[in-house]
Image 1: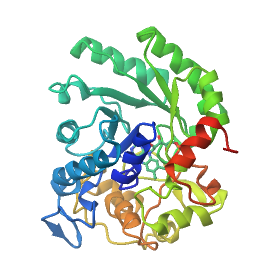
Image 2 (image 1 turned 90 degrees about the vertical axis):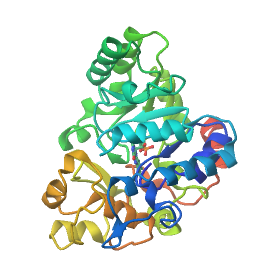
Image 3 (image 1 turned 180 degrees about the vertical axis):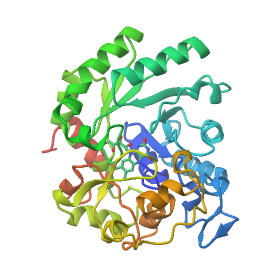
Length: 345
Ligand SMILES: Cc1cc2nc3c(=O)[nH]c(=O)nc-3n(C[C@H](O)[C@H](O)[C@H](O)COP(=O)(O)O)c2cc1C
């Protein structure tokens, strides 16, 4: 989870406790109060090399490894970012065992990771068609297929692989998508595992997803409610205090609807009275150097990073539709125990 939600503490601890911790490669310049950043402008990280800061990414991996040792760690890299190929490479060099990519179809992912054949490649999809397209292209061009696939349904936090209307359409809900995506995966390779994501909250949800054919699940939101999650206390408290109807879909410069908490920022954006849009960090391709940011009313790099710098008034706080169910903080160990054995453990 980016920016800055799943970094060394959360990912390292999840991997230590037997899950697969995923380090976000997004906005790494903000790690440890911008310690690795050399160039700023208007108080923001100047350019993609600072926003996707290589030294900071290496430090995140090193700090996570200090927690989990040799246990597998993943890196998540949005396909829509500027410098995608460089960040894929950086993540491999920093020590990722698995790369996970969503927000677009990562048709060339194997090319960028070609020097690291032991690194597993896992695309995120929202339909069997997307999986089919990716697998066909990878097989034709690179003679390889995905090592796993994350199927993300429309209750997840952050960006959705659906239109606004589809997010509420019963036909596009996760439980309807698992069987067709698993069938597609099996037709590519009988051993290709599908991990279901989006709205998975507890042990029963995991069992249900696995009964429908998933090999496992990917979870985001519930892990924000852990002591180890890398966000500051303001973020966690916002979720503890929020209600179900405060978690909503908003427009994003990435071009997909995104789910987060309705805060003061959303009111400012809706009345076009939000913070200035300057495109200092040049973060994502589809934004076209601030054009989409101006159309939707905010800069996503600046607003997501404000959230992890405890700026409640101007931060954008992503969360899945279950975010309101966080009512107290647990340790990662306690949470994983509940997920494996049930809530009463
Ligand atoms: C705060 C937040 C930030 C996220 N950031 C990313 C991201 O940078 N890249 C990505 O592929 N998915 C991102 N996601 C999606 C999660 O990785 C995960 O698949 C999804 O949230 C699962 O649904 P859940 O939150 O209901 O468990 C984010 C989710 C949240 C809640």
